Length: 296
View 1: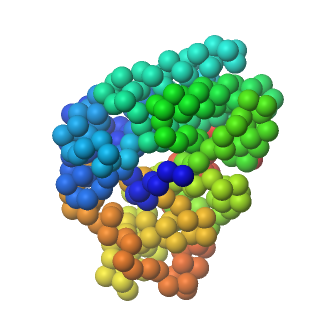
View 2: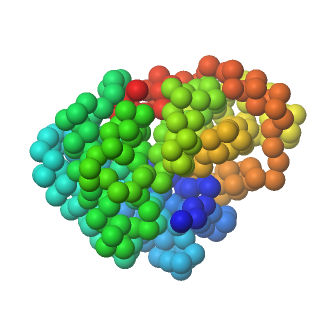
């Protein structure tokens, strides 16, 4: 198997210059895992930062490409033919490497199922066919040694089930990256426990709920007892969950990056974990659902 550092620097929303600077700052602070995506439109900046930060063998790089039905933001498209979907996916996988200036990535994630943004049902047969076409492209990309491992993001149970049962699927996703933070409960929509049962690593995006966890009175209160920040409490809460998630954090500040990675040498008590498990705020994105692309 491939060993993945538990904490990754996220780069969504950064332009090329900001992304390059954030990557350098993260590596100087001791972080070695960077997460980016085709639709962040900053791959050259991420690649530039990485080339200055470390040798290729000393970093872990995660990339991501978009679903074939992607109507909410760029790259906007509504590709419903599985063959066209496969070709488009393969093109964007190769483009990702070219834009990063890299020979390979360590992990490539499929950004979501081919459902419209905000969809709250399960994956239908037609959508499953598109997901399977994209996954076939991912498997082929891995066979070319262009990525060491492959996974998904925003996939719920129905989408994973039909992906695993597709006749073309030979590789189980190694990771499912979902929204996961204090306020969502211990096992939102039973998705973290489901992933664990399938041997799929849960990776939490937005673990601080875009700042909501930082201002959470519960997290502030718990933090005071440990002499830790509310952000550190929120990250530690994710790490201590039974599904043993990994994290994607986002910061350009050396101070905050240092705080983010200082969450391994202490732990929250069972009582504090229970109390935080019961919190129903903050909601974060998509009203507290783990995925923006499906909900069952």
